[in-house]
Amino acid sequence: MGSMNTIIPCCSPILDEPLDEDQSNLLAAWFGVLGDPTRLRLLSLIGAAGEACAACDLVEPLGVSQPTVSHHLQVLHQAGLVKREKQGRWVYYRPVAERLAVLAAALGG
Image (tube, rainbow, N blue to C red; front, side):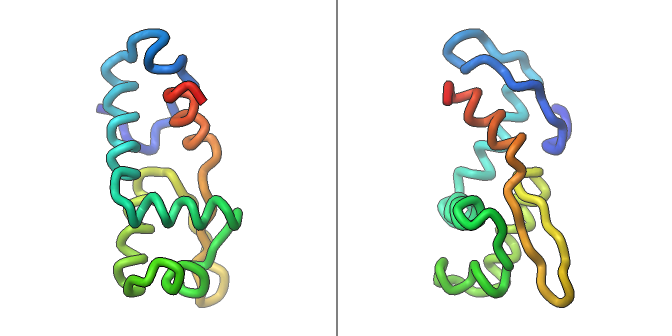
């Protein structure tokens, strides 16, 4: 299986033509990351804002601890679904639009 940080070419919707093994492994890994409700909400909050501070913007809306938010953000980052940038003492996250476009295309969106 390729790295989850590999960009796969935007593919046809999965119902239009079969995925090859690498594409299916990569998409399954990304969808697996998003299969957790907390991570899906985090990505939604970050995407809706365009950018979000981990400590400032994400802990309160989720109602979970800062270490829990940090763990889930790390998983999203390792999967390549969000980028992070440290600004002073704060870490800001942005969605990786290219990855989300691949997921949407695979679903026919």
